[in-house]
Image 1 (cartoon, rainbow, N blue to C red):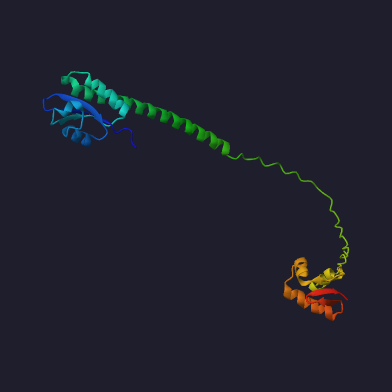
Image 2 (cartoon, helix red, strand yellow):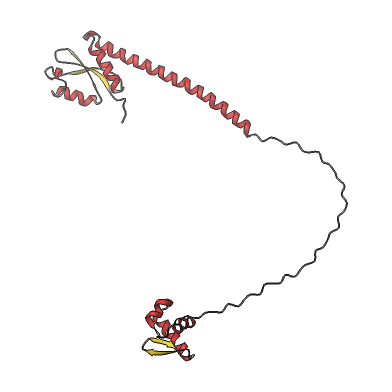
Length: 217
């Protein structure tokens, strides 16, 4: 929201007296005065007519200017309103000049910094060293004999099958192992347990003690 939207205004009442006020919506304020919803002073002195309005400013500045206008005679109210505007315009002009002066000084400092940084970034040209010629004796090249490197023997890994894993659990149990226990210990499904149990039976390693219970042969 823009804070510089308040204005000081002068209106002439039906008895030709002047009233000064401030507002941030002049159109609505004049309607309020003429409808009896404005200031108490203008309520019984309608209709009112706008005779002077200042330029936009902050509420604080508008209140100060209103105070000055209200404390001068009617013949000087309009003059005080204009004078107040002139004073604020001069103050604003002085402020703008000061800002402009500071910006120029800042711009000069920035230019100096840019020049200084540019000098630092310039690469220094190194002087070429004077070439010194040294006479060396020719060196005989020695050819190194290639040495055969024996590759380390790789041990053959024994592949452990699913049947071996199942047999390992069965042979450690004297009472026998059921399918559910084998599924839990090996992580295999029921179909895989049955298929590999058949293989172990054919090999004569295990036998069935009952339905789904196996023991070492």
